[in-house]
Image (cartoon, rainbow, N blue to C red; front, side, top):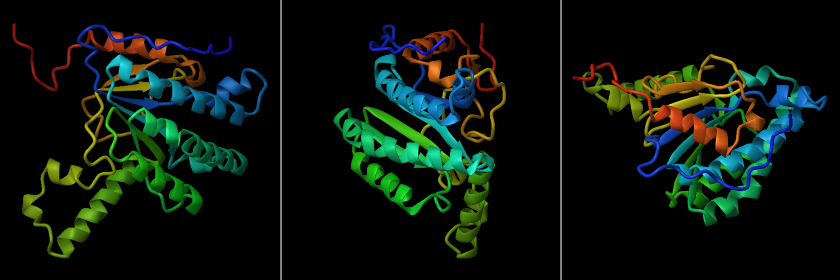
Amino acid sequence: MAAKDISTTPLAPEGGYGVGHVAIIMDGNGRWAKNRGWPRLVGHRRGAERVKQIVRACPDLGVKWVTVYAFSTENWKRSTEEVLGLMGIFARYIEGEAERLAAENVRMRFIGGRERLDPKLQKLMAGIEARTAQYDRLNLTVAINYGGRDELTRAARRMAEEVAAGRLDPASVDQDTYEAFLDTAGIPDPDLVIRTSGETRTSNFLPWQAAYAEYEFTPTLWPDFGPEQLAEVLSRFSGRERRFGGVVSA
């Protein structure tokens, strides 16, 4: 069954769903295309369209922060054709969405190591980050060449360099200190992590930040996951009891 286009966005109930930050592992693009006998990149292009829809829907659903997992440090293992195709999709998304994001007061930023990315793509990324830096209706974070272990390693390396240079006292290091060296510094931890396509693993996504997030694993492939499905997941989340290691008193 093909994904349907959704022109209307469900509205959050009064008081919202209680989800300020939702993080999404957008899985299933390739399978979606394969099921239809199409090249994998067709699924990735359809997945990019879904990102646009979800971004538009989030403010009406009470979500102020959304982080999407676009390309992992492990995804370089895929075919050269697919990797190059994905990089092209990222570039076209940035070029095509810059004005609309600015018009809708959406801030866009990226996490992950950039050194391996094409310089032209890096320039586009830096440009849209600067273009939208003053906006705050919605904060969109895209993880490209991101891996949780890589992020933690890079943060530890930078912190060690500060210690070696005498600018940081090891005895003063606490969780807040470490978080300041992460790619996500200044971004709140996700309340909810969603993974589409039926897989039930976290795939090295935000291991530090999602330590106390709720998880939702849905069998829906990403190109079929629209605002209605997001609203359903948020509604289920609103019924969960989050104790953060404590015990709810009678």
